Amino acid sequence: MTKHLAPSILSADFTRLGEGFSDIAQGGATYVHLDVMDGHFVPNISFGIPVVESLRKFADQNGINMVFDAHLMIANPKNYITPFAKVGADIITFHYEACQNADEAAQIIQMIRGEGKKAGIAINPDTPVEAVKNLLPGVDMALIMSVVPGFGGQGFIQHTLEKARQIRSWFPNLDIQMDGGVNLSNIQEVAENGVNIIVVGSAIFNHKDVAAKTREFVDLIM
Ligand code: DX5
Ligand code: ZN
Image (cartoon, rainbow, N blue to C red; front, side, top):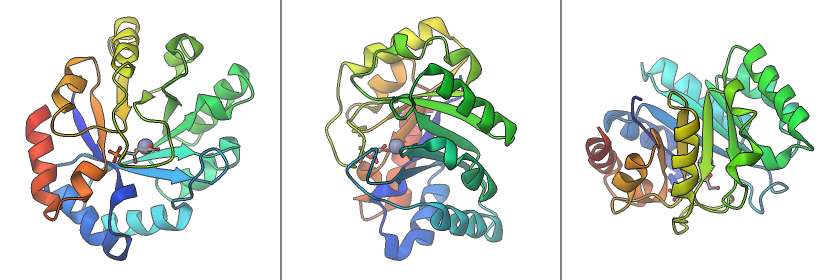
């Protein structure tokens, strides 16, 4: 599986978002992780459609080619699939825990695919992988939360590595993303446990040289 670094802009300086976006591209990141939070599914509000639209325009105007990886930490995700698809998300990931049941999750996956986008399903640290096993054949990516969703800068929850190993054993060719608390000291362990798309937020954007720090992470996983 090809490995990808997916810097999360949640920890970026929002007064200079274009600069931060350019920096992670310059540092070799191939994904940009867009943490959308609604203040209902998680106790935090981050950003939404207008920011993704602006970043997509900025990318197109500046010849920046990164995968727009939208992580929807929102209630009622089915109401927002089309809007995020329209403003340029390439992957749309919703939370299993935001669905009433597996049927609704399957319906959302179909909606995302119907928009011509890649579908991701996310599970929180305390959600067992068995809960989504039957849904995984229909998605392009499984997102395993290694922190409780809602905030950047939290500590990595070690037991989530076992979930990555389990999903990798079931689905050798599925993109598996790990999200939360990843830093220079644990990213190689994450990559060695079946994960091929790795989100890093604060460990990149809290650094004064974002491009150089991005490059450091990319070099560690390639
Ligand atoms: C948390 C988000 C994560 C987080 C990653 O709810 O889904 O993407 O922002 O940030 P760090 O790497 O700082 O944990
Ligand atoms: Zn995220």
